[in-house]
Length: 104
Image 1 (cartoon, rainbow, N blue to C red):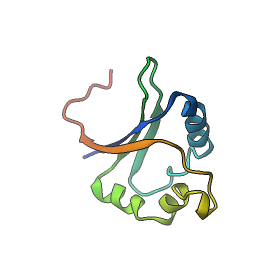
Image 2 (tube, one colour):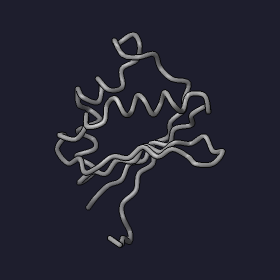
Image 3 (cartoon, helix red, strand yellow):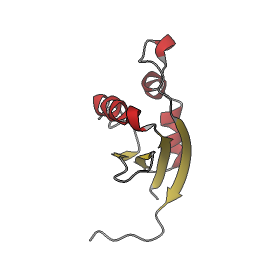
């Protein structure tokens, strides 16, 4: 059963372009991880400040394995770890499974 993880990011308006740039620079970084099914970064089209990072996984174990992987640590390192400076955003992780679906 597909598991959907949504990271709801509260992003100040001025930081939006940088958030999009950083995600675009890493597109495909998770693609080869076992159980990974897809990724989308959703930008609000109104005055909201919540961006959604939506990932789909074969199961909870696949997501957990990615979260404990070196690839995850590499992608989420801060300035002290050789990565870009942390952004002034807040994040909340949501978890879902598909109850009803239509391929349309």
